[in-house]
Length: 213
Image 1 (cartoon, rainbow, N blue to C red):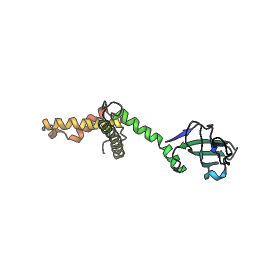
Image 2: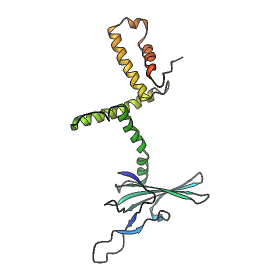
Image 3: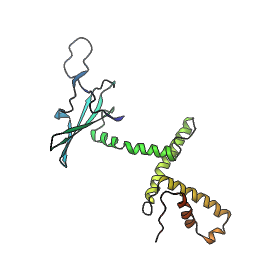
């Protein structure tokens, strides 16, 4: 699990003192002060465009979680006026390095877009299967179609900027025209399949296909 905590979330360092000899072992140490993080936890420091970015990684407790959290704090300091701000990311994987935690969190929108396209265009939200194998197949087909549609979009980028809706319309047009040409072969003598497909598909497409000069 990788997510983000509120910037003022209460976190505590693990207690490292000696056991008093009676009662439960003490769990919480000092409270984390985001403005004064120990240098021993500093993993990266860069300065760019008048702003210093300092990245810390620490293992801490949060009272809403039963186990230690792997926390990455991204602190940004404006060198001109000293103003600071920070972002707190966390994971339940204590072995996950800070750079991969940041990378994976930044990929969250791409993951959300993938699920959005799968539900909106490729039936992930509409299938009525209830058996495990059927659900697995339907979900995998939807995700496969997302990847295929993105591949086709990149292949067509030189001539046009198709959306997923454009790709579906062109594929449907090609399917119907193929049936028409099979039943009426004389049509192919008057007009080519590619030209007819382009003209008909453009009626329903958002982005029309540019014809070669």
